[in-house]
Amino acid sequence: SRGGMGQGQSGFELTGHSKAVYACSCSEDGQLLLSASGDGLLKLWDLTTLKAVRDFTGHTCAVYSCAISASGELAVSGALDGTVKVWRVSTGEEAFSFTVGDSGLAVMTVSFSPDGTCVLAGGADKTAVIWELALGEDSVSGEPVATLAGHKLAINAATFTFDGESVVTGSSDSTVKIWGKLSTLKEVRTLSGHRAAVMAVDVTRDGTLVL
Image 1 (cartoon, rainbow, N blue to C red):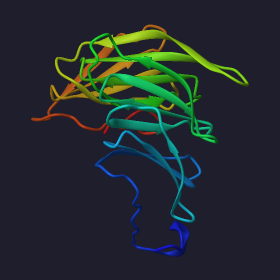
Image 2 (image 1 turned 45 degrees about the horizontal axis):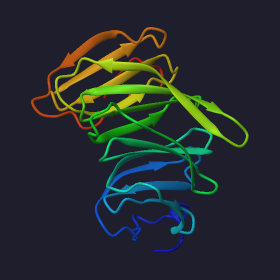
Image 3 (image 1 turned 60 degrees about the horizontal axis):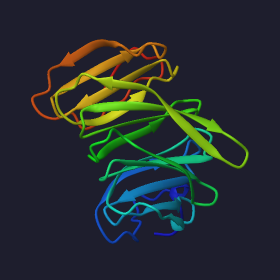
Image 4 (image 1 turned 45 degrees about the vertical axis):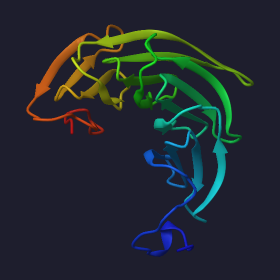
């Protein structure tokens, strides 16, 4: 199908990766899709034409997670070897990178804060980290500002609340944890009830419900 999402298709298929696709993220305007794959690539797709726009190259192993910032200017990805990369969406160029922990364990989840100034990454080392980005006109840098430790097994999902003040994480230990406020990021509550790994989490816009 080549008519785009807005013309009533019940579904469509995007092909181009050579290995499994582990994560996808849409831009806020719904025009672009970013996919992360075991082939080590991120692909940016135009959802109007259903064609690949560009590849993001730089990871040397499987990429497990990705996200696009609310502004659509930056993307972030996390890989099997513990590396996180920040990219410029308009060019596909790597702007900044860092490593989660010192164990080289997989990064399973990445996301941006609502204002795009922080990156949240969590993974197999049982922690999530927040890096604050310094966004220059021609450069991006960053520094770690918080480490969230408390899960007993890998963190598979993590997201900021819409006000950017709290974080929610989901883990292979079957729990969901709520952390906040951002100034302290102490564990506020642990939600138990699942009988197996928590693979995804989300929060309502008003912050009153966690899925």
